[in-house]
Amino acid sequence: MAATTSTSTTAATVARPPAIVEVENLSKFFPGAGGTTLPVLEGINLTLHEGEIVALLGKSGSGKSTLLRTIAGLIAPSNGTVRYRGEILNGANPGVGMVFQSFALMPWLTVQDNVELGLQARGVPAAERRERALEAIDLIGLDGFESAYPKELSGGMRQRVGFARALVLRPDALLMDEPFSALDVLTAENLRTELTALWAQPEFPTKAICIVTHNIEEAVLLADRVLVLGSNPGRIKAEVAVRLPRPRDRRSPTFDALVD
Ligand code: ADP
Ligand code: MG
Image (cartoon, rainbow, N blue to C red; front, top):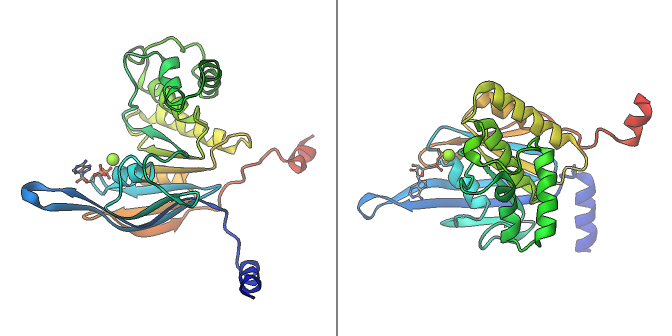
């Protein structure tokens, strides 16, 4: 009986794509001066569904990086939970790749070795690491730079390495912390355009993107949905649907038939 009820409820509502990440009633406090606690995030609820790009928009200090780091499982929430594919996280999130504002490359490693690092940590054998790294390097337009060191590259090229390092993991979700804000306007625009083009490819393995930004224009340009984070403590103040999620498969048989 219960099963029948639940089936009819599902049929009557618009089906949402499956959730990849679910954040429930999350709070984060840090120790403040003189034994006080500093509330940084409070009562955060958000879900990242398959097929969507979500922007977290907020001023500096509103807790955006902290929220992204809790989703990645790099820091633990003080209260509340983060789930990945239904399972409560207890440690690093196995399904995410991260891109950082400051690139976070290892200066003593070549492009190739920087890109392979995450695979090495996951125990991928050397031959497969190499093959996958070359594939990611090629995908993001870095071919020919495999043996270069970060200091020999421009900011835009360094961030390409940052992208390759995340994409080589073929992450279920890509988390990006102000990935374009250290770049000049044109370089940022180029990389944004390339990211959107990758996202539109049906074979691109990543099923959702969460981008943190303080740039409202960037949020609206990239995201299907924008969550606005207020400060002190960081709470979600508004949620704005920018557009319907973009179709992932633009090269469907129907489309091919139309253009042939
Ligand atoms: P945003 O990314 O939006 O600029 P952050 O998440 O970096 O904000 O930081 C939010 C607040 O939390 C800031 O006041 C910052 O100083 C504080 N904070 C962040 N990380 C820590 C930490 N590890 N220990 C103490 N305070 C922190
Ligand atoms: Mg930040």
